Image (cartoon, rainbow, N blue to C red):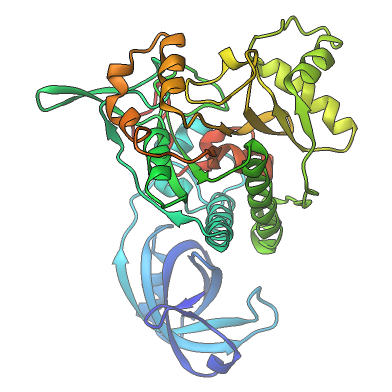
Amino acid sequence: MYRSHYSKEITKTEYNSKVIVAGWVEDTRNLGSIAFLILRDKKGTLQLTILKKKIPELFEKFISLPRESVISVKGLCKENGKVRNGYEILPDSVDILSISETPLPLGVVDKVEADFDTRLDNRIIDLRKPETQAIFKIRNAVLAVAHEYLRSQSFLEIHTPKIIASSSEGGTDVFKLQYFEKEAFLAQSPQLYKQGLMATGLDRVYEIAWYFRAEEHNTRRHLNESTAIDVEMAFIKDEEDVMRILENLVHAMWKRASECTEELDILKKTVTIPKIPFPRLTYDYVVNKIQQRQSPIQWGMDFSTEDERLLGDIMKKEGIDFYFITKYPLESKPFYTMPSGDKYSRGFDLECKGVEISSGSQRIHDVTLLKERLKACNLNPQDFYAYLNAFRYGMPPHGGFGFGIERFLMELLEISNIRECILFPRDRSRLTP
């Protein structure tokens, strides 16, 4: 618990001294001559102990406070080995900052759980729950180490436009908007811009990116607005250089999550750090494996959710959570993916326990080949004029990946619904709060 005016935690040096604390009223117990109030902030809770005979008017004020009201309290900090923190506060005065309305639309510490839609409809209150906050504290920790790792590998953080003139991926799942007299789109990814930067000499870049995808999915694994770590790097030999960066990034993030012991205890989760390097499985090998498990997949088809689950089960029996799928058919990958011969591509996916969490590739850096691939994908090169311009004046071999943050958290913490992993989820039916 913080001393509110100093933004630091109370320590034993504050025992027997006056402190000021602030937070939300989590619960109150009135025993007649004595009352106990539990005060909560983002670090946890503490106990306020109020004696009726000491300050009767203050006692009445405390016991009348509705749960989730916000108060600031000045009082004496006393050691007490019987309470969770090892100390309690004996109030001298209280400043009521905000009175909560009653009844609450859902409880913060109640044992009776609200349904998921009620939680999301009242997300601000839902985010007061320790177990909900724990997810985002872990998210904060793993993103912090992602920055650290990528910067240690000479990557520069960038920020690219989210309003663009053409589809990032060349597909139809885009949100259109009116941009003055023109039609524009919300970016599906930073793909076109981060590739262009490879021609500038800023040869290693990354972005914590927003993805906007107008897919009409309504599943536990899909969002229409999501976040990702997007990486691009130049002067590579092949996609293997990119995969090594990705697996080391995942390892660093997973390891940092394992150090969030307080949050993991709240969530009742354990995190086992994966071994690197991760196995590389070719597309052909995977198709053969899951066909043996009665999958109807034929060569050249994308893996269905059920196919991915089957593969996850196969790998789990071998004690493997993370694995790459490589050498996809060229026709199944975006236009900018480097071919490997006439039939295959230099694209890859990273899967975790049967769920795709990252997709990447070596990219095409020859402008003539890029135009050919655009046409092969039934796209008009004229629509990609600004993108192609970056390739006309010297472009090194390069590659990269997009790594979904919410899906990573889902698998890390074994969360059943991706909407738990972003503060305010956007899906086909939810546009508020």
